[in-house]
Image (tube, rainbow, N blue to C red; front, top):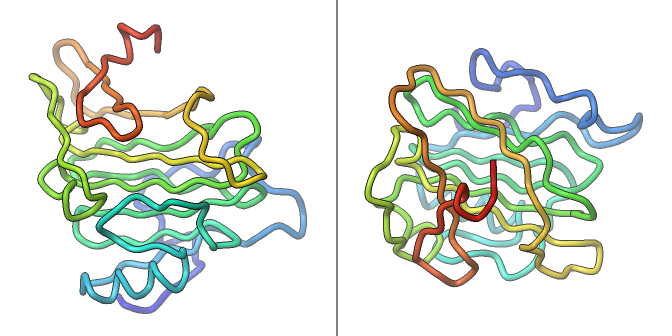
Length: 194
C-alpha cells in the first residue's frame, strides 16, 4: 500500500521484537515508520523529503529523519535511523532468511542501511561491486551501512553487530565487506570477524 503506518503489524511476519537494549526510553520516537511504495519515482521523492537523500549515490551526511524510517520498493529496503529510536526491523530478502542490525556500535548517533540486489547496486548507491566467487542466497543481496557520530562525522572503524537468521544452510557461509569507496570484497573472517 502507499499509505504509511506506524503499526507493528507492518513488520515482516515472524519478525522479532526489538532487543531489550534497543527499546528507547519513555518519550522516545514511536516504532519504526515503515512504508512500501510501488513507484520508484515516489520512493525517490519520499526519501528526499523524509531522509534527506535519494537513490543513485550514498548519502554524504547523516539522515534528516528524527526516528527510524523505512521505505521498501521491490527488493530494495532503505532505512534511516537515529539514536534513541527503535532499531530497524529485520530485512527479509524473500527466501525466508532475515538479517538485522543488533548494534550500530559505540558512539553512533545516526545510520543509513540500504539493502538491494547485486544487479541494482549502480542505480541504488552509485557503485557496481565486484561479487565474491561464491554466494549464499542471502548474500545475493548487498547491504550498505553508513554511520555517523554526534558531530556528523562518517564512522567506519567501529565494530557493528549484525544478526543473521538462515532458514536452510549447507556448506560454508562466507561474509564480505567493502571498504569505503571500494568495490573489492574483503573476507570478514580473514579480517578477524566472527
